[in-house]
Image (cartoon, rainbow, N blue to C red; front, top):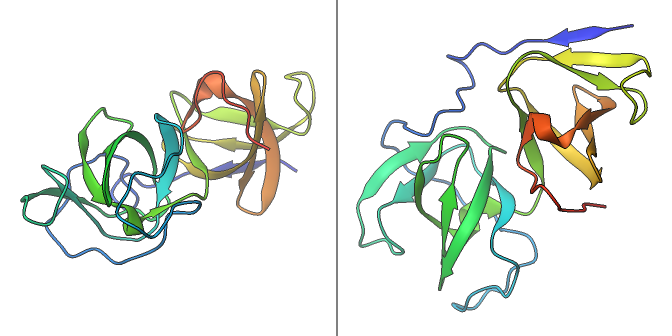
Length: 174
């Protein structure tokens, strides 16, 4: 059975510029609770841990809100750390500062480009499990070599990492 997943851009946009609204809190996994930098590698990918996340022009609540993300689980790249704040970059290349409580260590990715097949095995000759449009968000289960295992709509399938945003080119995820 082949499943095709489509998202309406208006319902789950991947763009970074949103309405000004307050954010909710969720802990970024594997981070200390003190004010120091985490010691985790930079750059690294994380996901948004709330449905509304304020993105500020600088690392602190005294800086104005530049925009608000409104997509829980959206993958973003941490490119810098300062005390309780993480400078993140999204798929569009927009950057801003987010409080670490609004980030999650749960790994997600976005499908990029055209409609992409996810395969039963890490081989393009294996049967396709489902097809996903560009912008569809999935949970990253593992990444090794050129292949990533994703979970999407209760199904698991493999896709080449070159078709994803949310995983580094040489990163291994287990």
